[in-house]
Length: 203
Image (cartoon, rainbow, N blue to C red; front, side, top):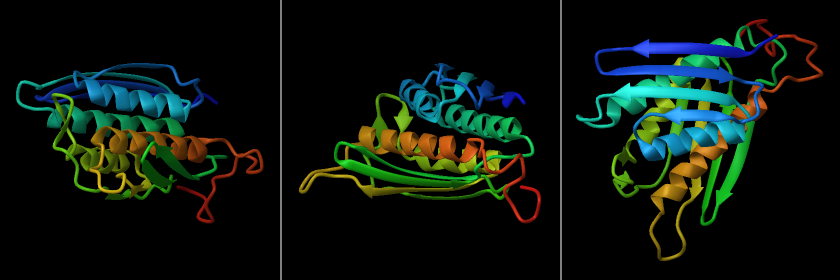
């Protein structure tokens, strides 16, 4: 069964197209107008093993908020749609990812119940000219809500002794950890024999 989805989301503020194949090779075609965000979405594709297309046109003349939020909502909706009834998946996934001085842990449950917890230290306000670091939490909240998943993201270590957190490393490690956790959770479990991984019989 093909585990693919296409989501189009259009508002007065943004126009978003997301296409995903959960059983891909990590190929990505990403363009949101926010360079660092594009780089992060490439991490989702590469480290998740998902083929991913994201094309967003947003009101960047105002700021990046709507562009980033609506992209995360469309991406979450695409994940939810591609998973279908979630038959035969592992359901749970977790990953701990180091990136130089930074260590991040992500855990996911494809539960059908959206709940997101996110913990990171204070960071410099921007990465590059347009990525506000305050948006990282909101990205995970928007993605988790639309994907209908439980997601925990914790920055366990963020700075060398006496130094300050490198915002680039802190955020990138989060995206890599979430991607690896999603890769594990969405994988087909050969022992599940196509059953939905819940005593309820549905997720």
